[in-house]
Length: 147
Image 1 (tube, one colour):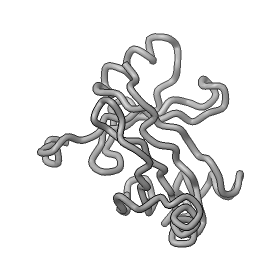
Image 2 (tube, rainbow, N blue to C red):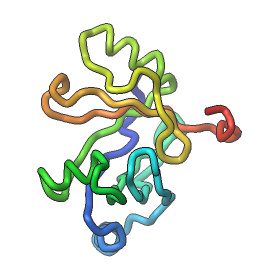
Image 3 (tube, rainbow, N blue to C red):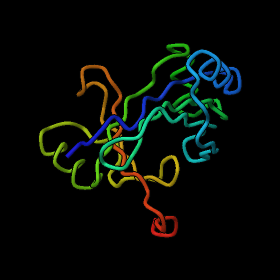
């Protein structure tokens, strides 16, 4: 079951300038930053609010660190802006399998490590009305060594 909007991913060329914009304009503060070498991005998670299921909703700002990363290619084609939407779920494995059974292409055979040690997978945008969609199971304390 999908429980919340986990985050909205926004592709940007300058992470510091984009963080500054969202902080000055809306008062959002950086909750977490990291470099994800596998995905070729540097990112900042700006926490928007808590949710009923104990999770939170974020803006995820993504700056590519390599020209061959998916975000760099997307920026070259589309410019800065909304890159994807992510829905939270307690069971990314089960949810992705159920969605795959409905004929939606799931981009990873097995979920991968995402921001803040979450487990993630993506759904093909051509099967989701043009929207790249991510499914996320947030890490719980102590999960860091489980993946």
